[in-house]
Length: 256
Ligand SMILES: C[S@@+](CC[C@H](N)C(=O)[O-])C[C@H]1O[C@@H](n2cnc3c(N)ncnc32)[C@H](O)[C@@H]1O
Image 1: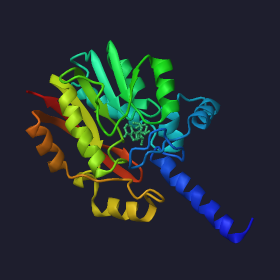
Image 2: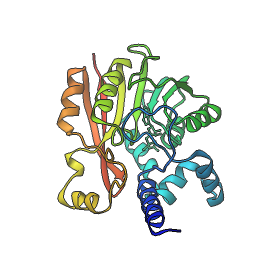
Image 3: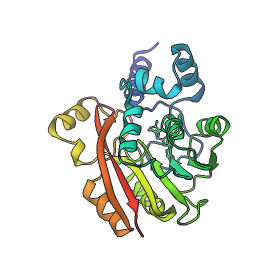
């Protein structure tokens, strides 16, 4: 191999390793929407999870991200905040990917309808086949196929650190639109609470190679004020692991 090719290959595998820790790898989704629109490869990930003897979600937490139990602990926090107590009958998830949160959500409640908006077609198909969810078409950060005030729980995990500001902004309005009064909205963003000097240093040294848009940050206050303006009150929040540092999970209840 020539030196330039070797260097290219080394950079490529370094990028893959870093993105792998955040739950990414290099596979292009069918409908690029801006931001990090690649997701881990379906076949290879499933094969590796099988070889490790782990459910795919646990494999991603443990082997790829090095954060065993991370999904479980977020679901436990959501339960403690009462998110599942109201027995949501309709759930919508943006960017479920491998379905690691979806699978655990379905252990907490039994919705009659679970819609997903996911750009990575192999994963969307797998989730439809495995869990009987409904995959909706992804078009320009909208939830067009979902009616106003129709969903009990709208969630997105580790998605808004990967989209551009505009994509996230547009999805926020849509999440508030489709949630029924009394319903919950759950998502994480990398807020100022996740960005102390040590975290900044870790991201600067080890983060994000090859993807300028990951991880994207957003002020907590901006999210809280926007959702308040859309009739949604903040009920609780907590930190969860993201890459080399953390992300903040926010839980809103739509009141009007
Ligand atoms: C970092 S992954 C997180 C996946 C999953 N929520 C998890 O935590 O394991 C981001 C996910 O968002 C999906 N995605 C990217 N752009 C999207 C868009 N515009 N609309 C919906 N999903 C999108 C990706 O395919 C991927 O599944």
